[in-house]
Length: 132
Length: 132
DNA sequence: ACGCTTGTTGAGAACGGTTGTCAAAGATCG
DNA sequence: CGATCTTTGACAACCGTTCTCAACAAGCGT
Ligand SMILES: [Zn+2]
Ligand SMILES: [Zn+2]
Ligand SMILES: [Zn+2]
Ligand SMILES: [Zn+2]
Image 1 (cartoon, rainbow over the protein chains, first blue to last red):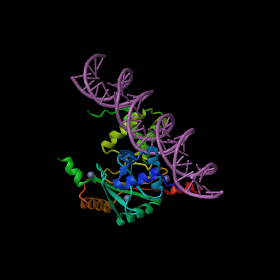
Image 2: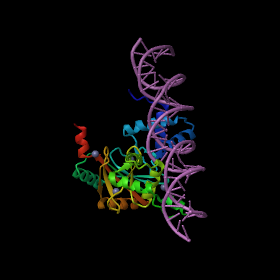
Image 3: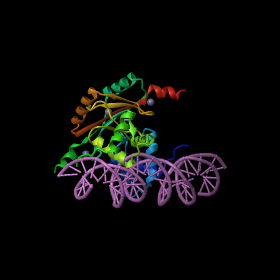
Image 4: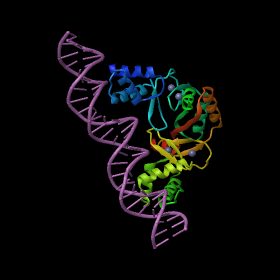
């Protein structure tokens, strides 16, 4: 029942910290393998899932449906501005949006409200690289 | 090059209109087959894709990653409040959110900004049904 | 240190939604 | 009607993710 601390789990957390931005499970797996820390892909998925359940990482879906993971600085609820091409991420909080969302939903008689608010764009670096 | 009007395409649009709320490609396919209008699944996907490209339908991703489609009343940009269990949908616009989103993103030097703002909940009917 | 117990791992199979393939069908037009 | 050229549909392929299950190893009591 208790979560055991294994080499693999530690490695996944390290990879997350090193990469800093939103990454897919496969990218993390690739990164681990590149640095010699061999970890099974299924294990990477399991570790990420566990971390997400424990709210240790944020998960969001890329436009193509792939799940992206990130260890955010703040633990409180927040949103993200993510670069579509490199994953660069800026944490954002929108008190205005939160209030708006719950008010609107309640007014329609909906319950158990959750909101998805994410911003996607191209960061300055990627824009420069693209127009080279 | 010109889009030909075929029995299948017409059928897909009819199914969309009849179901009114956000539905998956497979649900629509099932619905068509149920009413006797047999259409291949691949064709349903292609029709929906074409409609989405033409902005005739809105597409959004369910929490499990499945794509959901809907013919919305308004053609202008807007968002949705969707019931997780039955798909019931309420169209919403949030001028506040729009302004907030573009301002925040621009302030970080991001370009080509897009925002995802969707609300998920349980509608009154589904809540009642669940607590029966 | 040494087993025991029990959660964890990993290679590969399975899964589910979606897209690609390609020969047959049919919409459009002269 | 006939030629042309898009569309269709059964099926295979794809791809991210989850499942399976025997081998493995943390943690713990001794
Ligand atoms: Zn975050
Ligand atoms: Zn970038
Ligand atoms: Zn809509
Ligand atoms: Zn409902």
